[in-house]
Image (cartoon, rainbow over all chains, first blue to last red):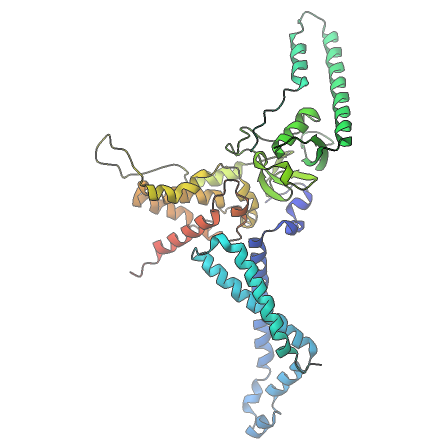
Length: 141
Length: 297
């Protein structure tokens, strides 16, 4: 829409403070969706560097000296990767839970409780993420 | 809701006495008199403003001001008004007081003061509200009053509603049918269940709050918007219109910029001053559209 002058906070990103639950759900859903797409392509790109391992001898694979195992082991050795994995889980869990919420919305179920279901998915995401921390971080330090 | 009758201000009596002055008196005298009256008015307004600012029981209003036609007012700014609080005062009451007492150039639309005419939708403290239905006591101070976002401002709190009305017109918001009852004097009756179904959707007052709150409508000018889709729902779901007209209506709402643009952010439902479940209606029309096009049975 054309704007011939600046109306200040009224029409710019400063309005985030005035967003309601449904709007936050939408923003988070878009954000997590893009993160997951980004991850998908990174995942394919990184793992495809391990393709030569298919031609490695059985003994090398058993000993864990093939390219694939080496790549994974060296990646998992980085603390940053461990932390990013926790973040990836959080993003994926939220996207799944909110996606379910949106499916129900499309079916016309629970539209009156849309804000509560958003908060519920946030809390559940938080709980699952916290519960996953020991598994992901174990042995990283 | 505002039930207060605004007190008649001194200003109107002043102008009346001025007008009553016989025309035979010289132009000069009248000009002089008018000038003095204007001076007095200005002085009185200043005094009132000072008094109100010092008073404890006043509400602070920050009002968006902009006037493209007056030099020096083309730069948008906020004016502060201190309005004496009275029990049951609405945002509209406060604005009217500010206009009548301090600045007669303060411009905003209002008519019925009963949340029926839909002319005073504004952006109050960061939300689309109907000013006549918003209690000052429920607002955090200072109360910030701005024109509706995502619309061109004509002056002060007045926005251009033309686009909103165009979208409303686009869904043909009137009853049409080609199915008539047999007898010539028979009425077109609607059963109670059907009336209940469309009841909420008939409450729309065309205030434009939903359209202003909608993120999608802000980015896509062709999107019909919540109010227009709700109007389409009101008639598409009305059984008296018959199957053929319903098909026509579904064709309008399932266009590229129709019902499918809705991303269920629920902003419209949150701000609707008449509590119309807009998102619910949009979702139901989406399902109708799917059922209409996908036929596996």
